Structure formats: C-alpha cells, structure tokens
Length: 399
Image (tube, rainbow, N blue to C red; front, side, top):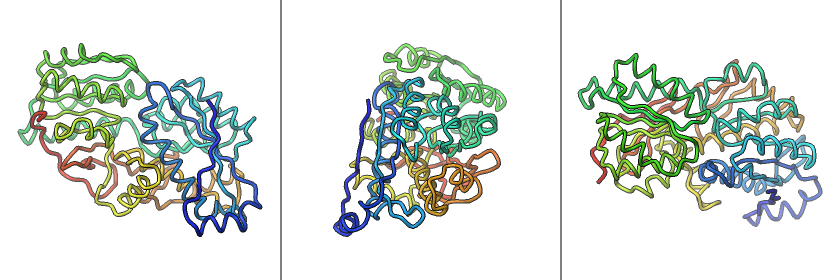
C-alpha cells in the first residue's frame, strides 16, 4: 500500500515562507517503509511513524531543508511492508527506482533492517537504524558500509539485564531461579543466545526456557509453564504483542516474581495505560533519562504534533536518526548520499537523546539497556554511557 503525504505547515510564518519562496524549489522526496499491518504494526505505530510526521512537519515549518542554499520542502512517500521482509525490500527498490526518492529512511525492527541492508547498500542510501539491536554490527557494517546502529548490541542489552538481576540477588532481594522465554525471530533468538550463557555464568538456575513464533496469540500455555517452574525472576525477549500478552497472562496466573522483565513495548506509554498500577516495578529493554530537558521537550512536541506520546526507548532514537540525517544534508549542502554518509561517519551529533557519534563499526556506543516503570515513568536503570540512571526496585505483586 502506497501513500503520498505532504505534511501541513502549522504556523503562519512558515506558511508565508512557503508561499513566498519555497514552492519555487523542487520538493525533496522522502521514502519511508515500515509495518502498518502485521505483527509489528503496533510497535511501528508508536516508535516509527509518528517521528517521521513530527520531523517532516517541523522541517517544513522552518521552510524546508537547506540544500546548498536552497530551501526545499519535504514530501513523504510511504509503504506498508506488512511486517514482511520481502515487502520491505520491494518497497525500498520501488522508492528508489520508480518514486525517485531523494532520501530513504531505515525500516522498523531488527529483522526488517537486516533484510533490507543489501538493497540499501546497492542503492547507496545511508541506513541509520534506530530500532535494530544486534550482535551482527561488526559483520553488517563491514559488509554494508552505509549501515549505522543507534540501539546497540544484543550482548549489552541482555548482559545488562542479567547484571541487574545479579545485583538484586546479591542484595538479598531475589532468589536464584529464573524462567526465560523468547519470540522466535532474529531479535528474540539473538537475545536468548546471549542471555542464557550470561545467566549461567552469573550462577542463576534456569528453571524454564522456551520460544514461541512471532504473532502467537495464545500465550497462556507459556505462562502456565513458567508459573509451574516457580521462578524468582522472569525474563522475556519479546516483541510488542507478546510483551502485552505475557504480562496479561502473568497477572492471570498470579506470577508474583520480584523481578519481571519483558522486552520491546514495555517502554510504551500504552503499557502503563493498559496495566495501570500493575506496571509499577516491571523492567524492560531500553529506557531514557526522563529528567532530561531535551527529551521532555521532544516528547511534548511529538504529542502536540501527532497526538502520540513517545516510548521510553527507541522513539527518541528514531527522531535522533532524523536529526542526524538533517544535519548531514544541510552541512554538506547536498543530496549526494555518498557525501552524506561520509559526513555521518566523521562527525558527532547533538540530539534529543544526547550526543551521538559512531565508532569504526558505525555503532553508537552510548545507549540505554534496561529500564523500569517507577512512579508512572519508564526510567533508565542501566546504560552504556548515558547520564541519569536510577536504582532498580523490587516488584511487589500486580495490584
């Protein structure tokens, strides 16, 4: 499904600029492809699409992107890949060869980004991923030199979660028995592959382990088995639908572990909206510094522009990826993607998530790894170089 969008200008000043000067220049075509249907549509609706809408609206309100001294408005052509890697690849190809896109934004999720990496590389567009967490960064960046990573490595995400559990155990807050499950796609399989040996190395007893297919509707058998294993802590490398489903089943089964961790979507505002006070103490992947003025300002702008609140992890990184792209284009003064890519490699960027620069594998090295719902906010409790982490708390039931 193809949709062409010219985001409206919201201020009188900007409207005047558009009428007076900008329409004389050719619009910049921005290609976007991500799920609007399929298992990952809910996640993309929170993390991906609203940020594109905000960025385009803000850029156009400023009169467009300055490319070599010419202000050019943004026009978006977007495709629904149906959470299907083959459709992602076809859409990227179509954007480049039929829609003549000047910019193509990275897709949503680990699996879809990895699937699209060869076509991005062949077409020469920088692929600044903001929702892909993988240990294949070295291999991917070596093979596809225009692929960048903002969310970090699976190893850090999994090992930091285990380290939080270890600290709680050493403090006498939790016991030694852990149940772990994962969604059987690239993301969940990688996290499980790292999490299992990390738990074993830390001396935890893995009392239950299983995986389930992406899109599984009935997770009650999984949580019944978890409950029967009598764990002290529960860890799920999960995607949005199953994060909600596993939490709901944990409440039904009265799985009263003192450490409950689910992955993608735990940081979504809708998680707290759905589970209310029961979300308090739930840990999950990601996190942000909720006290950061930059993040607070970004969150307010996103909600004002789109009606959507950002999640407390990848949403900010998605907007940061657009800030990076914007600065690279305006500073180089060109839409030559080879020049833009090189600028991204060579420079650091001030974003809503703090300073971002890339190592020799095109990877951002400072990111949040574990967060927790505390006082109605999903606060970062573990990171690889960010300020503002808070101490974890014990989960005390589902009331």
